[in-house]
Image (cartoon, rainbow, N blue to C red):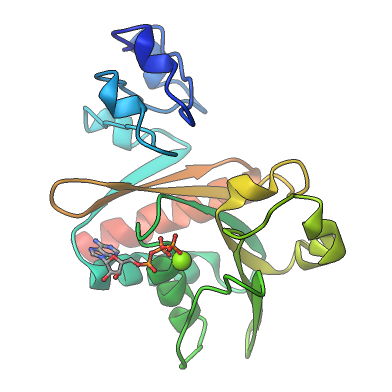
Length: 219
Ligand SMILES: Nc1ncnc2c1ncn2[C@@H]1O[C@H](COP(=O)(O)OP(=O)(O)OP(=O)(O)O)[C@@H](O)[C@H]1O
Ligand SMILES: [Mg+2]
């Protein structure tokens, strides 16, 4: 539901048109409500409201409310558990301080990493050679041009068997491959809302495993 035309014209905003309520529950779709002009003009922000429970159970997406830093780490752990040792590429989106590194820390801990996890802001990528295979953590915040990633040999990192988590993936558009999963973290009044969206068959499989895991943990 887009209520004002002006809401679609804010700087750095994303224009998403949802034409009917039905279009919000179709496969590959997302539930997006742009409520006011202000809500779309925050720098790099996107206002997303999940209105019904049904919209949270769409086949390709999953929304999770995350109240604390610890539960963000827990969600990262759950994703790693759902991934197993197979490959997975994850785009982590959200404004500064949203919780992208916290999520990654949980993922890495579940994969067996015991030390600290810091965003590789200056080196762009931090490799973790773990017992069950490599995990690569990217932070592209300081990337000036996506072509810099070519110098880094980024395509070699994105092989089918590696696990890559990328903060600020929008800075590498055009060079980075399509991700299996897009994780978008939104600020809410009480914490964060995490939206996980599968964009490949592999992403879909992992998301299903995560859904089952979450359900089992909740019961
Ligand atoms: N529900 C929450 N989930 C995650 N972090 C939270 C939450 N509530 C508060 N925080 C705080 O928000 C901060 C998140 O930091 P983090 O480094 O993970 O963000 P980031 O998205 O990686 O930021 P950047 O874009 O600067 O790399 C931490 O200081 C954490 O304590
Ligand atoms: Mg970070």
